Image 1: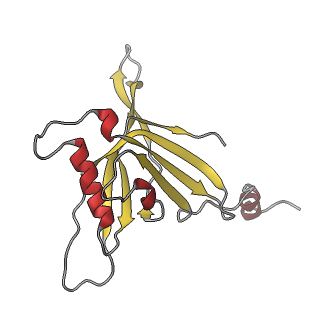
Image 2 (image 1 turned 90 degrees about the horizontal axis):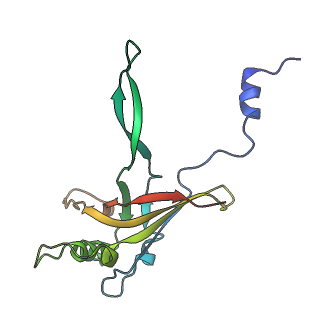
Length: 174
């Protein structure tokens, strides 16, 4: 008897499906604020992204052939991480402090890159909590700490989105 298309599709999966809610983000940096360390953020990251890698391309046409694109440079897009904020606002203080470490307000000159960058590790887990995909982003630092809206009519908790720049990322071996 022939296998149905649905059964063929189902059989093509050797493992369960990856779940976007099974992840962890670890930030390693020298920056701290009033005893609050980046490692304290590990369980407070509510949303994250696995970053993309794209190519800058140049178009070239040879004779009557169609225009073709040729890659000439790798590009890494910014990373957005969203954190749950506790009542003491320690996460907000930490990221404000990190921004201050990048370009101090009192002198407006950027610090040395080695003094403010860190490594961000993002791990995707399977349903049995085993890491199945991990990446490290190198020379990472915040380039934007987004606003926190205040509103008398809103219940719930603050969520702070921080945008990070980084030099490159690598997939960790499994």
